[in-house]
Image 1 (cartoon, helix red, strand yellow):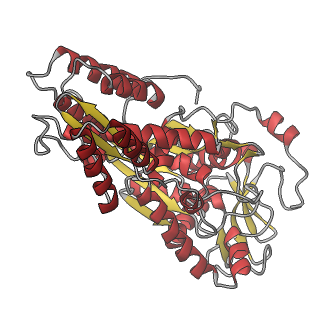
Image 2 (cartoon, one colour):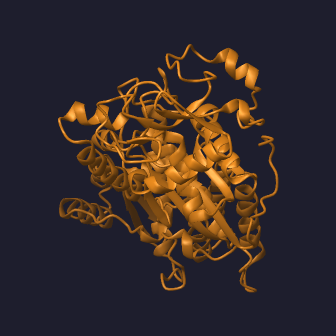
Length: 479
């Protein structure tokens, strides 16, 4: 929590215990949310690329996340259910499916374990009871609260002292709290009586607070000591700060070794958020002609710890860059010696080979590009720098097509663009006819007609290259 870049050392040699905060499934994920999951996917792929076995656990918040990250407002699930005239259970399952549909569309690897909060209530109750027994929690007004005054390092993740946090805290309407920063571990019917989701507990019938679910789920599947915990940077001051306090108080030792936080996606109006309304989804991007792959590439262009400015022009630039890279790759497929059988499938990072597995027949140029890429991603996952290596390699006239294809497939174990599934787009019959007509015009030296047909083909997305070995083309369907 020193906010410094330090060498990574896992708890168990060769294995990584990775926990990521999952979605609150009361609405569609917006593209700002999805940027965080793309960044976390890059982290997981990088770890696999360097030879680690990754045990990745993600929670699904389907209860307990109030409209404020603190303890005010209604449960977001209740808000969503009322908005759509459905039960909270129907809302949860619908938006959970929508979230994972987006995850798959973005070629994000599925977690080893997906854990719904509502299916882990006993584990949460157990930790709450342990905190009460150890004197870190108290019951008041029917609810159970964590006492931040009892935890000496409260606020260390956000690099704030307790006095600073108290000074910055807004007035809390909950008279049961001994300190305004105390947070709820368990709600009962004494607060938010309209809550549909309730369970029996030693503290009364009710439901868990938001923060306790992550501690309970992570410890159930990863143990009481976690290598890396991920989430958005907005989770630092409240959610992750509270997770640390309750976990270390319950377990009696350090809980997480490394924290990985992704910065905001920024619109002209500021940070994208559901509460502010007017957010963009993957479906909205598709309506504007942009694919999930286009958005993934867009996310690769900024470091995960830097805010990413979203504009339609920037997304269009990413789309064009990705199309150009795809065209180069499919062109390499047609070069002699660029067969498909010798290149591993890069779609699943969990089976990626480590970078140390380098063939003795690799050229110095190929080795140099591999080392440059590896150095970039090893330096706090500097994917923009790694993309620079990709483009330098792709444009290097001294490398063969087979070498370029092999290198890009190797790099894609981290980038996750699915390059080994790229194929040249099928040319519609009408465009094939125009291409044949142009060839015939060139054969009879009717260059005016050939140029006219070239322009018509270009307008339809067909780029033509006349070379000494014949005419080649690339097709980028107009979106």
